[in-house]
Length: 68
Picture 1 (spheres, rainbow, N blue to C red):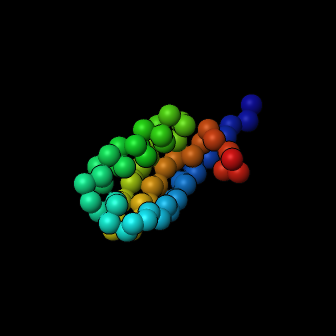
Picture 2: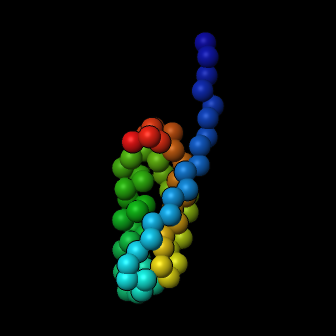
Protein backbone atom coordinates (compact mmCIF):
# COMPACT_ATOMS: atom_id res chain seq x y z
CA UNK A 1 0.00 0.00 0.00
CA UNK A 2 1.19 3.48 -0.73
CA UNK A 3 1.26 6.32 1.78
CA UNK A 4 1.09 10.04 1.36
CA UNK A 5 3.29 11.81 3.88
CA UNK A 6 2.99 15.38 2.64
CA UNK A 7 3.07 18.31 5.02
CA UNK A 8 2.39 21.52 3.15
CA UNK A 9 2.69 24.91 4.84
CA UNK A 10 0.51 27.59 3.23
CA UNK A 11 1.58 31.21 3.76
CA UNK A 12 -0.83 33.96 2.79
CA UNK A 13 -0.72 37.74 2.96
CA UNK A 14 -3.84 39.87 3.14
CA UNK A 15 -3.49 43.65 2.93
CA UNK A 16 -6.06 45.74 4.81
CA UNK A 17 -7.27 49.27 4.14
CA UNK A 18 -7.26 51.49 6.12
CA UNK A 19 -3.85 50.45 7.37
CA UNK A 20 -4.80 51.03 11.03
CA UNK A 21 -7.51 48.35 10.88
CA UNK A 22 -5.35 45.41 11.93
CA UNK A 23 -3.30 47.34 14.46
CA UNK A 24 -6.38 48.80 16.15
CA UNK A 25 -8.97 47.27 18.41
CA UNK A 26 -10.04 44.61 15.87
CA UNK A 27 -6.66 42.83 15.89
CA UNK A 28 -7.76 40.03 18.23
CA UNK A 29 -11.12 39.38 16.49
CA UNK A 30 -9.40 39.24 13.07
CA UNK A 31 -6.86 36.75 14.42
CA UNK A 32 -9.62 34.63 16.00
CA UNK A 33 -11.67 34.71 12.77
CA UNK A 34 -8.75 33.56 10.61
CA UNK A 35 -7.94 30.76 13.08
CA UNK A 36 -11.57 29.59 13.03
CA UNK A 37 -11.75 29.63 9.22
CA UNK A 38 -8.50 27.66 8.97
CA UNK A 39 -9.78 25.09 11.45
CA UNK A 40 -13.13 24.76 9.62
CA UNK A 41 -11.29 24.13 6.34
CA UNK A 42 -9.24 21.36 7.95
CA UNK A 43 -6.04 23.40 7.67
CA UNK A 44 -5.08 24.31 11.24
CA UNK A 45 -3.32 27.63 11.71
CA UNK A 46 0.27 27.38 12.87
CA UNK A 47 0.79 31.13 13.19
CA UNK A 48 -1.28 34.23 12.47
CA UNK A 49 0.74 37.44 12.48
CA UNK A 50 -1.28 40.66 12.22
CA UNK A 51 0.90 43.74 11.72
CA UNK A 52 0.04 47.37 11.01
CA UNK A 53 -1.24 47.02 7.45
CA UNK A 54 -1.52 43.30 6.66
CA UNK A 55 -2.12 39.85 8.12
CA UNK A 56 0.14 36.85 7.54
CA UNK A 57 -1.50 33.50 8.29
CA UNK A 58 0.56 30.29 8.14
CA UNK A 59 -1.48 27.08 8.02
CA UNK A 60 -0.99 23.38 7.37
CA UNK A 61 -2.79 22.61 4.13
CA UNK A 62 -3.62 18.98 3.62
CA UNK A 63 -7.35 18.72 2.88
CA UNK A 64 -8.04 21.67 0.55
CA UNK A 65 -6.63 22.04 -2.96
CA UNK A 66 -4.46 25.12 -3.36
CA UNK A 67 -6.09 25.99 -6.67
CA UNK A 68 -9.49 26.67 -5.06
